[in-house]
Amino acid sequence: MKTSEQTANVFAALAAAQAEMSGAKKGADNPAFKRNGKDLKYADLADHWDTWRPVAKAHGLAVLQELLTAEEQGVSVVTRICHLS
Image (cartoon, rainbow, N blue to C red; front, side, top):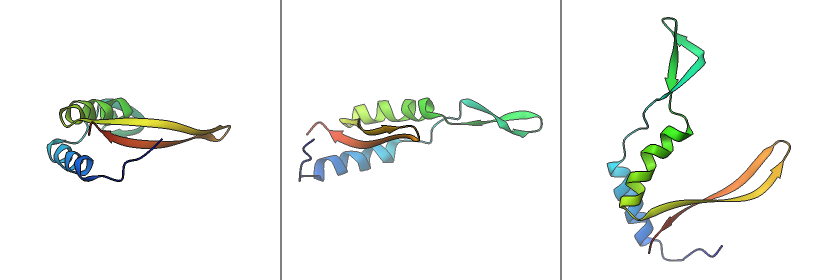
């Protein structure tokens, strides 16, 4: 994939998006850790995406992931943040 040498627009959009973004809400239960007999909550990947998507959309940002390798031990990906510019 070709990457642009011009980064001012994407960096400005990222800075603006981060200024608006709050922490992901903790919506998943973690039964491995308990407090007062109750499972502790954590923010799973879906919670993080739910936080990212509306703010990213408002600033013309998107995420692409390209699979590099898939092996028995796991996968390796390259994650790119793209801007509509």
